[in-house]
Image (cartoon, rainbow, N blue to C red; front, side, top):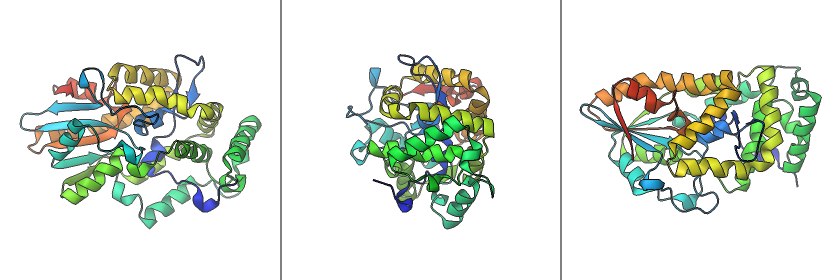
Length: 325
């Protein structure tokens, strides 16, 4: 059964930035695979497989507290696709949000659904006039894409005019939908709505256009690598996510860091552009919040928090006290 054009998912801007990268399944894979790291950073899923609420060893969560001179700033590792049944969240997470007067998100969430944003997204996702998707990929990779699109019921005519990474992301999002996941239940959407309703000060770290430029700016060689590796492992989406969501659910910073190190080793240039550089650019704003007098919560992809280039270590190097809740 084919999927109609109007039924195809359109990833939100952060979803675009959160969909691509490389990561090893240390137990079953000996080669790297692409397509899950930034799902890992931002699209980690809670209780996809019927697990219990997010509580790790010692009651830890993917939540860290930054103690400033006069205020507290919480860092929450974001999960961008969930099920309705995943709520309510653990009390410690809800409390951290409720006590904050400032809510910080990765991007301008309220701008995502604006017609002008949608038009820019469509424009930037399309290939140049006269260039086809088949021309942008090797024959083998294009054939793989065709096969997966046919299995998913997506006509190739729908994908033929868009950039390779966006095409494979469409198939990835369909895989997530099969698991019953929906961005409208993601942590960022959940807390953004609550923040607006409560009259909290809402602060974006990046513009939507900045994120769109990131995800649509891959070179031909990078696109080939990302698409090929993603397609080679797309059928293992469920298994791949199990390890990642478990690390998020238990607040296992060591495991998250291990996964990120593998990603960084395999695709250092892409990792730097999509992860390291962005995390570093957010430090001044978080420092400003920590030195202020307003309690705040910063909700960003979990992969931006851990590791040598993650926000936790970067903030500690600035002399701030950071502890996990």
